[in-house]
Image 1 (tube, rainbow, N blue to C red):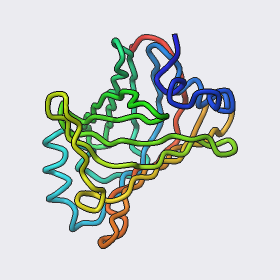
Image 2: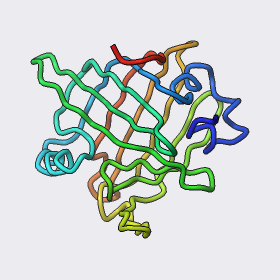
Image 3: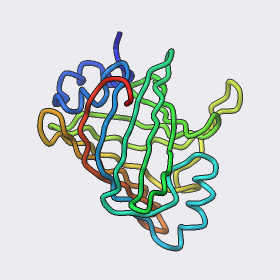
Length: 194
């Protein structure tokens, strides 16, 4: 059975370094690492609203321990992110991914709101280009222009060695500049959660 990312990338899957193939392999995977989470102070009220509807996180931090568990159920890949701050505060950011055809994926942060992205392999990196935000209303998938919400999405993932990778996720609004970023380093692993 092919993983969701393997389906989206097609033949380019083989060009991914081993750490990124492990990160996106089929089945249950667990990545452990640390995140830096940044956004401007003026974004705090909006980040809190977004977090309440399941999107992103509403707390900044540096080198924050993070565990990402991924499971495949049917045609969906579920992502469960657990971010544990030094104070003991734990934030969860959960989503599910689906293939959307034509080499694209959609990450839904709740049953309605999603981000459609196009992954591609460039050298030893996996690049995602945000295509649009979407709202799923029954069978309809309504486009939401990037500029109307948080701006353009870019994600770059790069293998560090055979099992570790670095990732950098950014949202850049055409008028407000960079409104959100999280980046970090992870060890790709597999198996059931402890």
